[in-house]
Image (cartoon, rainbow, N blue to C red; front, side, top):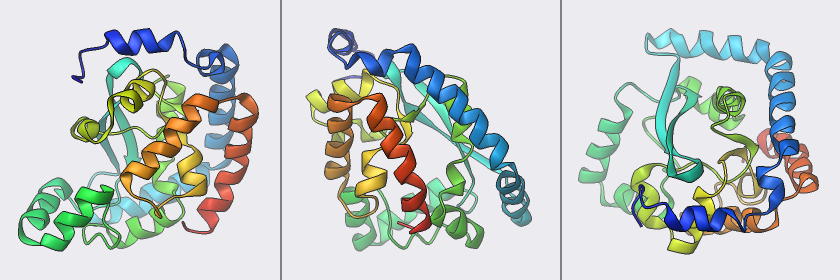
Length: 219
């Protein structure tokens, strides 16, 4: 399935759980994001200061695939060295173990590109605070499937991809709460697919309540 081939996505949108397209979900996104940004502003400012110490950019963005297959800039605090993409490509070329791990999980458990500040930010998920800006501008939701890169589209089966593209990606979700860092990419996709099938306001509230505990556990 190509990114610009959206016929099946629009057809699937009619069968999406109504809550996922409701004004209630959007209202919750806005109110919750504003409250979080105000309450966590000291963490935001501290993170900005620490990240800037190595002289690189404070914020980092990558193009991600969102609702209806449209791409958007997904923001984070920078947690890696400058030119992290180039470093990754070189690691994949020269280290078979790293190449295999990346192919399987799309992550590196002991990523040599992560800075000392980045390790702390990631452990507490503080690096993802800027994504509340994505929520406020409507490109993401507080709860939903995680946004993925264009090059990861081939990892999804067609049915799962259609479901992903029919809703907004989220800051947190069932995978982050129940299986974060402990599953393959395919399993994480399954968790998100189930969320799209079963989403409700009660489920969103439950996942939001459980997310801080997952963060504190450093999972």
